Length: 442
Image (cartoon, rainbow, N blue to C red; front, side, top):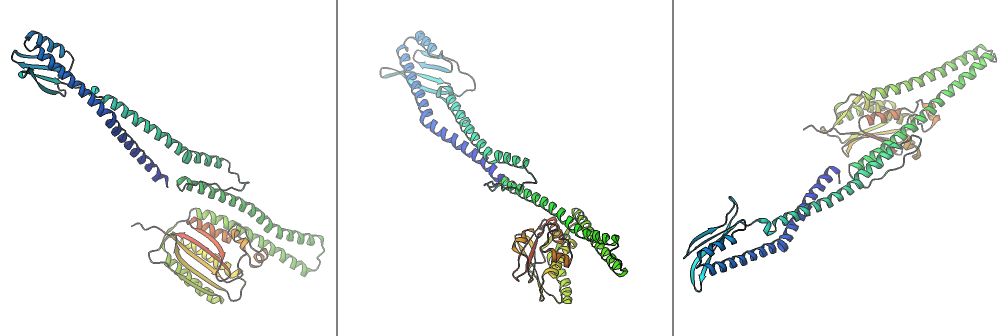
């Protein structure tokens, strides 16, 4: 469960558990303790009332003694006695103003004859009925369950949030480019789990970038070393005077010029790649219709492939409502590079290229397949790496530096998409790139 739902749910559970615990405690305490205390106190009051009536009955013929007895019995705070009988009316005791009172009138008898009435007025204090103890125990029960639950939540948060974040910080402090990243695991499917996966993906991207950097240096050194060695050899021959025939000298100079031009082209491609990377950072996008974009590309390459004698088929399942937040010119470069690679490296006489568009997982999918010789399975994961070429001999024959597909991947990723290569159903190579569908503003 996501933390944005889990944490509010935990606090809701806390509130419900505390409420039910306190409610249950109150029901238990009131039923088994409080009611009994009230009953005991009530019984004491009843016995005390009976004793008062008996004492008044004994003294009802002696006004002064009766008055003195009433004064003594009403000496306790919160009680007032009012007698009305044959010998007169007497009232003793004081009551506090604005307090709850309970009045009870009892007959005073002399044998079988009623000789008066004693009115007993009390102002009972709640503490006498155990209300104070009830409140104290209720507060204790509330604090007890709250502390227990908070301790449990602290342990839970430490185990599922604090500790994983600590482990992740430790992992981030140990990132090294010269060490291949090991998978990190977090079982919960929440924001921290997403963070773990993103950190591991970042480590993989850093490792891939470091590997591409090393490969780039090696490739540049290789691509420059070969023509430089040739140029150096021809210059040594010319300088030694071994080549004396003017025609051969001119031919050698032309070869030197060719090698120099090749190196210039190589450096120009490296420079262009760097410029593309910079331009992509400032790339501007706009909302475009996926179907119109697809149809314009299909129309262009249907005519171009027909002129080259190459089969080309295009089909898409986009609707007029399918919008992409993209730069159409940069995406055209991606398609152009993929189709160009199919034409140059397919190595088949009856070349057929299929261009397909459809929607899957909220992404606009663009698929380009051919029926050429394809790419070995082991080479597919490295196909989009900088300066990676499947066959050096084919590269030298057909031109290219191994930067085309790397540029394509950069363009697609800059659009928030992804790119992959796999064996085509036609027997050759299939390359698919996906661009997120723009969400409607309605």
